[in-house]
Amino acid sequence: MSGEVIKSFSSPGAIPLGLAFDGKYLWHCDNGTSLIYQLDLDGRVIRSFASTGGSPRGLAFDGKYLWNCDDNSDLIYQMDLNGKVIRSFVSPGGTPNSLAFDGKYLWNCDVATNLIYQLDLNGKVIKSFSTPGGNPRGLTFDGKYLWLSDLNTDLIYQLDLDGKVIKSFSTPGGSPGGLAFDGKYLWHCDLGTDLIYQIAR
Image 1 (cartoon, rainbow, N blue to C red):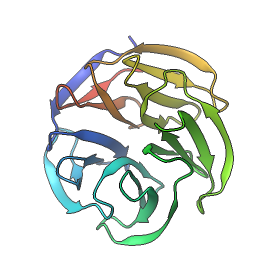
Image 2: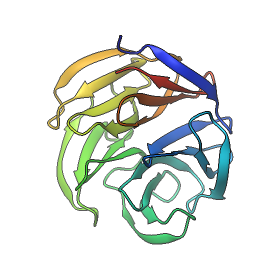
Image 3: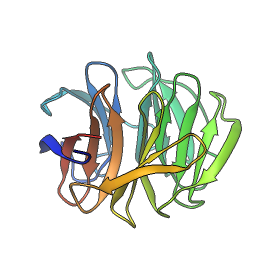
């Protein structure tokens, strides 16, 4: 059933936001510690490093590199798995909050503009559309659809690539943060419970 919790564990910090999956591990950024963590699927911290901008909000993995959007710097960073910045560019909105990668393009949602942007890897906007809830928090891609969590509605939305809502369901906590997809399940972090959930889609 959509939204069913498979398992959960405590996040390593107190303000859990971004999530990404690299095929084996979760990557997670916390705005309180300003760290990016590599986690196994039971929540054990493998390693961590400081985020470049100091206010990490969203993460994506492109098959080789991590991408991180930062609220302080208003930049989107491409970095290696040790945190070394490869390059960066200005985000299209004023408050970047989450990232996803679809195999070719980045997707970025922004709280200030309430838009989801499709970006090439140099930051050029391909297209954009409004989010359904008004306060976008987490974003991921499952191979066909985008998934978006929203703080206003406390819902997770399945969207097509033009922003049409396919379905939605309640989040397991009251303050949704980042989203990731592991090939079968969604992962969701919540600021209210400080938990990271594996959930059915």
